Amino acid sequence: MITEYLFSSPQGDISLTPEDLSRPFLVAPLKEHPFLTLRDYFHAIEEFILKDGGKSLGSALKKIRENCFRPTGIERMVIRSEKHGAFHHVASVEIFLHEERIKFAVSTALSEEGRERLAREFGLLRSLNDSLKLPYLPKVHQMGEVIQRAESGEVEILAMLLGEWFEDYHEWHFSVDGGRGHQKLCIWDLLDGHRFATLEEAYQIFHEASKIVTLYYDTETFRQIYPWHHGAGDFVVSAGEGRITLRLTTVRGYRSIMDRLADDPPGPMTALLYFFLNLTLRMRLDRLDGVGKTVWADDFAAAAATEGFFQALGIMEAQGRIESGLAGKLLSLLQSFSEEEFGKLLEPLLVLYQEDDPTDLAVILANRKRHVTLLSRVLQALQI
Image 1: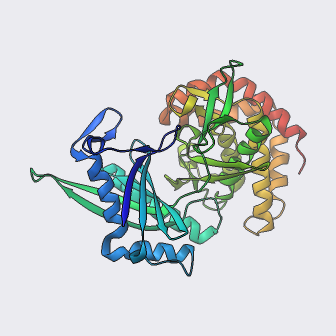
Image 2: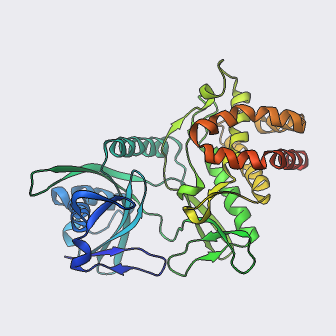
Image 3: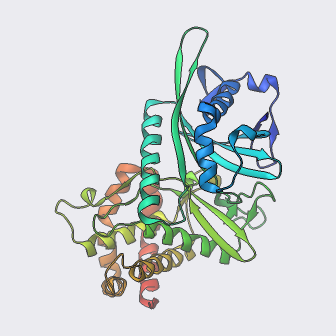
C-alpha cells in the first residue's frame, strides 16, 4: 500500500519532504510539541485507521457502501492535514482501490481537555444522528487512542475520532472585497479557488444555517447545539448549479442555556423566544477571514435567520415534533413587542455574551439598536 502525507492549502495540496516531516508537531500556533514530529502525527493517524487489521475502517466502509472493498485490499491512502484548532487537529483520509475512492475525517486531540471534548462530541453526534435522523451532522464511526513514545520514555496519548468527511463542502467567512472595500461572504473553495458569494447565495447560507440549528432544538428540554460560531468555521457550504446546501461539522455541546438567563424555570414559549433571539444575534457574528477581528453580518442576515428559523418550526410541526400552531403563536407574540421591549428582552443574553466572549459582546452592543429595529420590521412583515 502506498501512503501519502500532504498539507491542504488554498493553493492546493503541499507535498511533504522528509525534512518537513521531521519538524516538531505544532499543538497550537507557534507552540511545538515537546517530542512529537509531523511524521509521528501522520503515522499515528495511519495506525489508528489500520489498527486491528482495519476492523474499524472495514465497519465504516460497510456503513457507507454495502458491497465496498475490504481494508486488506487498499492500494493507496492519502492523509491530508486540513485544519488545526485550539483543541482538535483535523485531517482527511482518502482510501483508494481500483476506481473506488472514499474519504473520511479524523479528528485528533492531545490535551486532557481536548480528549474530553472529543469524547463528548463523539457521543453527542452519535446520539443526535440516531435520535433525529437529520442529514446535517457528520456520521461518526469509531473513537480510539494511539500511544506515541519518545526515545526518552515520554508518552503522548492521541485520542482520535473517525467520522464522515463532507465532500465538496467548503468553509466560509466574511472578507473584505479589495475592489470595493466592504465585507462580503467568501467561500473557501480549495478546488476552484476562493470566491465571493452573491447576495442571494449569502442569504441562502444564513437561512440554511438558522434552519439547521433550529431543527436540532428540543422544545421540551430546551436543549440546543451550543456553542457554535461562524468564526470557527462550524458550518460548511456546497454551492453549485444555483443550489446551496449546508452542513454543521461539530457539536461541542447540547444543553439548555435557560438556567443562565433566568433563576426560575421558564415555560416552553419563553425558552423558544430566547432561543430565537440568541439565534438572530449569534448568526450575525463571524471573524474576518476566520482569524481576524469579530465582524457583524450585514442586514440581510437578520431576515435570512428569521425565515430559516420559522421554516424549521414548520418542518417540526409537520413531523409532529412540536404542537401544531406553535410557530404562529410565537410569531404573534413577537409581533406584539415594541422595539423598546425587544431591547429589554435582549439584556439577559448580553450577560451570557459577557461571560462567554466579551469581544462578541462589544460588537453586539455596537449594533444592538439597529438590530432591534430591523428585527422588529422583519417580524412585522413576516407571514407564515
